[in-house]
Amino acid sequence: MIKTLKRLGAYMGGRSLLLPCSIGLSALHGLLSLVPFIFLWLVVRTLLTSEGNLSDTPLWDYALAALAISIVNVLLYFAVLMLSHLAAFRVETNMRRRAMERLMRAPLGFFDTQNTGRMRKIIDEDSAQTHTFVAHILPDVAGSIVAPLGVILLLFVVDWQLGLAAMMPMVCAFGIMGYMMNPNNNDFQRMYLDAQEKMSAEAVEYVRGIPVVKVFQQTVFSFKRFYDSIINYRDLVIKYTLLWRTPMSAYLVAVNAFAFFLVPTGILLMGHGSQPTLVIADLFLYVVIAPMISGNIMKVMHLSQNLFMANEAVERLETLTSTLPLPESASPATPKTFDIRLRDVSFRYEGAEKDAVSHIDLVIPEGKTVALVGASGSGKTTIARLIPRFWDVRKGSVSIGGTDVRQMDKGELMRNVSFVFQNTHLFKTTLLENLRYGHPEATIEEVNRAIDLSQSREIIDRLPEGLNTVIGAEGTYLSGGEQQRIVLARAILKDAPIVVLDEATAFADPENEHLIRQALSHLTRGKTVLMIAHRLTTVRDADNIVVVDGGRIAEQGTHDQLMAKEALYYHMWNEYRKAVAWKL
Ligand SMILES: Nc1ncnc2c1ncn2[C@@H]1O[C@H](COP(=O)(O)OP(=O)(O)OP(=O)(O)O)[C@@H](O)[C@H]1O
Ligand SMILES: [Mg+2]
Image 1 (cartoon, rainbow, N blue to C red):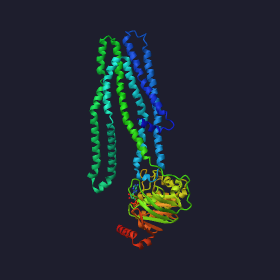
Image 2: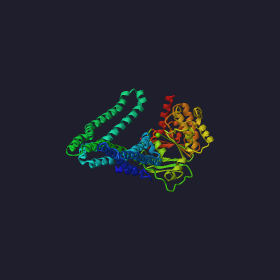
Image 3: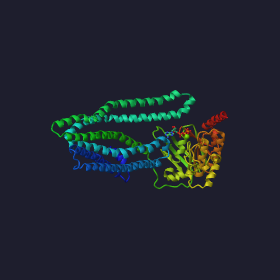
Image 4: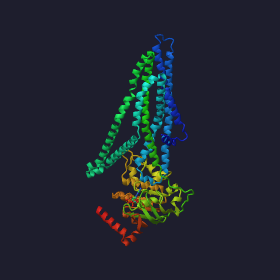
């Protein structure tokens, strides 16, 4: 509890007093909520003992006092909620802000390994989870603890014998509650959450797979796992419910049984000389206020569940954002030229057993084009991503114009490198904004030029609102090949001296292929280029072709040199030709 509060407190910023104030006022509210009942009790006593002569009694004063305090208390609760909501929104906002700040500084490669849906859920929904806890549960709990204590005190002060009678079943109820709250149930809660998560994951998997499943007519098999997760969830819930059935029934019986001892005790008291009217007035008070204990205890019981969820939310968010940013150089150096050199570079993905690429020596002279080819999984994308510093190398160095990329200012590195990767993303905003992304001050003439060079003119002409069409909005989806051309237009507009291209596997449609090749030739003209091409025809004219095999460079040279060698590239080329012939 304290730990969670401290954790949440860290997100309060300078307003750390909001929550304690809210909690303090809520406790006061809990106490004050009892006072009108005391006045009501006095009213009842007065009525019962006045013997018809009401004019001399302070009946009206009591009634008005009860009303006034009730009104004050409503206002007080309003203040409690106001303060706690201010605190809750602050925590929520700061959690999101801090997460975003940390994510902005995370290495680019980090985003490859994260499921974006999960990231969104954690930043958005989990931080919202804390809202209920801070805005409602915490202040309510303060009142819910203080009010029952006040009730118990009152029960004993008014008449200790009646108090004892009313408290007896309550003590039983507390015992049962203690049993129900045992720590094993927390395991259950985690199992419950896990089962829920698994079921939703399987559901997503199932729905995603439907097209594939239909094609291969495998409905039964794919449904099986989803079905199993549902059954697992059902069994768990039933077990959970059954586990609670007996203690919960016992608790409810005990907690509502206060009148069971109360009435006989009252009768006994009357028999032993107490004034019957006063005993009846007391009984009235007890019957009215004793249930407040159980009602409030239920609220406190829910605390543990909400505490658990708030804690999990903060935990997940902090784990997500715990990836350290790449170190930045204190005195960044600016390269004057743009030749790229990889010197004995090895790199290993986090958690992997062996290097994804090792001992890579590679030079891309300024203004030249080097192509990487090789089998799937050989390490081409990995090498390409080390240049814009998606990750830092494990051994060796990557340098631009003789300056190690680790010594460069991050913004400068980003400005100097355009990268177009296998699954580059278009934002769900206007096409114009998408294009200007890499060069926000570009004039409309420059934008139009980039559109023409990337052969995207006809795509734009076809869209209902031209450049102002929002991509991804109703009916304005672009095909894979069209998206690729827009992404190339964006890179052309950015006009960075270095271009790293990781071409999407294949847009087999020859029309699109032709257009993309034209766009590529405009993008790469006069630039220092590293390109990964899956169509060997695109690679043919590169100044140097590097064949990657199992994370190492197997051979390199021009197309003619490599063909003459009759080694790896030669075989790849023959295979490729056969495949193309087969396709046509
Ligand atoms: N984010 C990652 N985490 C861990 N391992 C990875 C990650 N990305 C790639 N790998 C591994 O690194 C190796 C090289 O992958 P890479 O993506 O560089 O291959 P590639 O040559 O680009 O393949 P393709 O032609 O299919 O695009 C593979 O064994 C792959 O499983
Ligand atoms: Mg790749």
